[in-house]
Image (cartoon, rainbow, N blue to C red; front, side, top):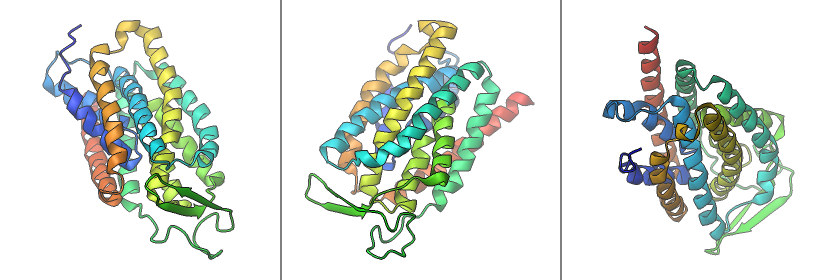
Length: 297
C-alpha cells in the first residue's frame, strides 16, 4: 500500500469540507464523484470500487461534520431540541439503507446508476429552493407550517439574536427525512439535502441556525450509516477493502475544513453556494449516467 499515492486529496478534501459546512449538504456528495469519476481518469493505479468509494466518503464525512459541529457549537448556533425529531427518523432508516448497501455492494452498475439518478433529481430541487424573505413573523397566518408554535430564541456567541418558531417535522417532513436518510445509508448522500430545506423553507428558521442544526443531524445520521457500511466492507473483503492510504489524507483535511466553514458562515451568500452545488450535482449526474450507459452498451 503506497501511503503517498493520494497526497493531492488533502487540499481537495479541505475545500469540499468547507463547502459542506457552508451549505449543510453532506460532503460525501462531492467525494464520491471524485473517487468514482476522476480517479479512473488518473490511471489504473488508482483503483477504487464504488462500494469502497461510498464507504470512504461516509467515513471521511463523519470527521468533517464532527469538526463542523465543534465550530458551530462554539458559535452557539445549534438548536439541539429541533434536531431530535429528525434524528428519531433519520438514524434507524439510514442503518436500513446501509444494510441494503451491504447486500448490493458488488453491483457496480446499480450503485452508479442510482447515484446518477439521485444527483439529477437533487439538481433542480436545490435550484428551485428559495429561502423566505421573512424568517420570523408574529402573525399566526404566515406561510410557516408551525405558525402557532412557541417562540424559540438563540443568541450566538457574537451577540446576535435569532428568533423563530419551534420547528415541526410533520408527516410530509418525516417522509422526506426517511427518503434522504435511506439514500445516505445506501449511497452516502441525501439527509443533509432534505433536512436543511425543511428547517429553512418549511419552518422559517434563520439560515445560520438551520445550517448548524443540520450539521448536528447529519453527523449523527452518517455516523450510524458509516459504521454499518465500513463493517460490511470489512466483512466482504477484510481490512484491506478500506483504502486507508486515501482516508489518511481526507480525514485530517476535512477536520480543518470543518473549522473553516463555520467561520465563513454569513460572509458568503447562502444562495450562491446552493446554486453552485446544484449545477455541480447536475454535471455529476450526467457524467455518472454516461459512465453507466457506456458500461451497459
